[in-house]
Image (tube, rainbow, N blue to C red; front, side):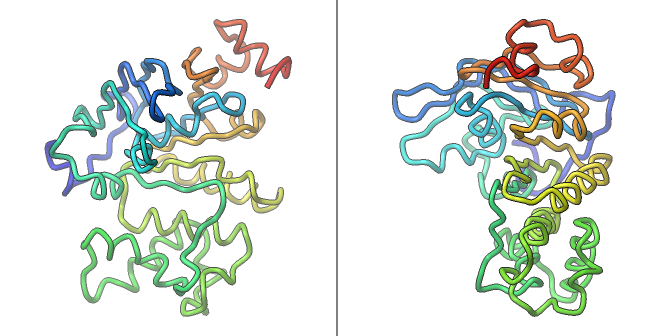
Length: 266
């Protein structure tokens, strides 16, 4: 893949898709959980992935940075192109791919034995992109982007696990941003948080979407409507439809989408 392991390639609305997914099938052993998904994801902005539990939302997102294959017996077929290059090509280093495509999980997962500072720097150390003398600048920049700097700047040596749930999630976002990714994936990042912490994360998503391509899995229809520019609706492993969020929520093309959004099932 051209420079996949070395460089970022930030795009802008109106250019080619950031991701172009064609015929994506995801399997766990013989069980197929995604059935030939075709979708383009625009550069910058937020794409929400919605659908009932078990529909393949999280699996789809994990295919975008090759985390799906970390599960024993799991594999993906089809093509997932990032900036035109197939991320499943043999020459692509998955670890360095995940530097370009960061991920934030449902449950905040700061490294419990690490300080706040070391949590932020852990990704750069893992990908061997850490340079002496830049640590403090990287930490401050990432924490500022994650709207956490003012709350923790005087206790950077304290354990990350000592923060509140919402602060821990923002620390995980800072950890992902510290390696300067192109894409940030979020798998139900607010489901374990209280309403106040959820509002902070949503505000943060709004602040970040002009700089990063963001894909967020959410079971919360109101949240999808609030934070996303595009929405993709999945059902039983199929992508039913995708498009501008306002269109999906007000004039969906498929009756199944309307039934799900209006609460008739799911």
